[in-house]
Amino acid sequence: MKKLLAFMLVLVMSFGLVACGTGEEKKKEEATKAATEAAKEEKTEAAKEEKEEKTEAAKEEDKKEEDKKADDKEAKKEEDKKEEAAPAGELNIGVFYYDFADAYIATVRSEMDKMLDKMGVEYKNYDAAGSQPTQTDSIKSAIVAGANLLIVNVVETSSEDAAKEIAAAAKDAEIPVIFFNREVTNDVVNGYEKAAFVGTDAPEAGHLQGEMIGDYLVANFKDIDLNGDGKISYVMFKGQEGNAEAEARTQFAVEDADKILKENKLEALAYYDENADSKFLVDKDGKWSAAAANDYMSTILGSYSEEQNNMVELVIANNDEMALGALSALQNAGYNKEDGKYIPIFGVDATETAQGKIKAGEMVGSVKQDNVGMAATITQLVQNIKDGKELMAGTEELNVDKDVDKIRVPYQKWTAESK
Image (cartoon, rainbow, N blue to C red; front, side, top):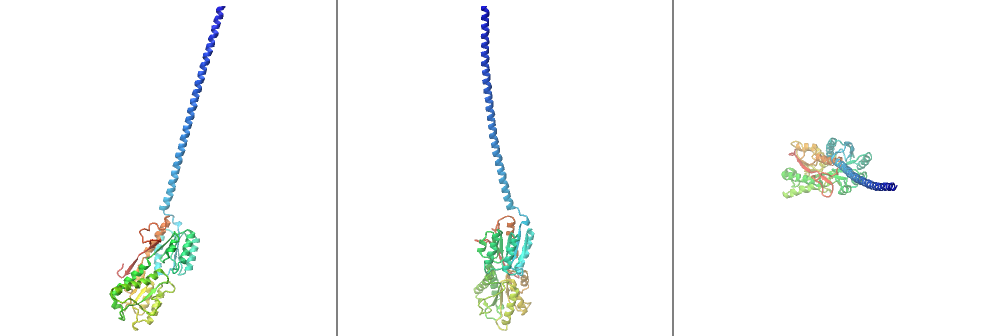
């Protein structure tokens, strides 16, 4: 019995030890499992964070790439705007002439039409017929109708009011305006950043004409001095009062001729009417017309002639049209015909008709106002606007005034030897 009880006690104790061992193992397993789960969870969290960091970095990289593409696109748009020509239909140009009847202006219009046609832009020509109110009204109507570039050969030049009003209208509409041929003041051009002027250096024509006259008279003085009084009697035909070109030509043609005569110990020019207050006859309509000069010359020939020993011996005109008008009157009186008596005549513009008269020996010379160069310079500025550039872009090689956007097209002497 005692042995049985002892055996039973050992058996119970063995189960207790086994159970105790099993509990410890279980605790170890649970601790290991918990540690594994914690490590796994920590690893998962770390991976998640790493993934999020990578995602944020990728997003940032994508944003940079998108910004770069946007910048490149904008830069390309700007480059295209600068370099690519705009479609022809975008420009709607109004070209305003002071008078279609003016011979020189007609040659500019003809050349400009060709160039604008070649450029493929829309344009319309307007004739003011010498009326500033007509021109101003036409400009304002054209702007309302959609004109977005103005090219203006202003009528009124004795006052800057008209040009200022035109520039103000262009400025209000935020469109460029190119004045040409008939000079406007620096204040008009400088008053609007989209304004420019294309013309000539007004005094230059007078200087060149004066040089031609002086040189010709020195070489032919005795033949020209019809009454032998040692002086050359002249008449001056002035195109318009207050016009910069007319004023300069009237002044310098005589002054420069006198300078050459004096250098050669010859008498200065003498105006045909010594009692006249003004030493010129002006076209009262301001049109620089052949008709005005013809009327004046015809009247003069009624009182001044070789028979009366006071014949006009030299004709100076501000332009070829007036020179041609005087020539017609002289020819009606028997002068400047083949093998006849000759009165030297000088003009300005070198129009095709005048060139023919010079080649034929009916006139002595003219000063070429370059109609092709004038039209080409204007259309160069038009091309700038068409291309989306600044109005005066690329004009560095041209003759541009220092403190104002005025481009000067040079004059040239034109004689029978010219081509």
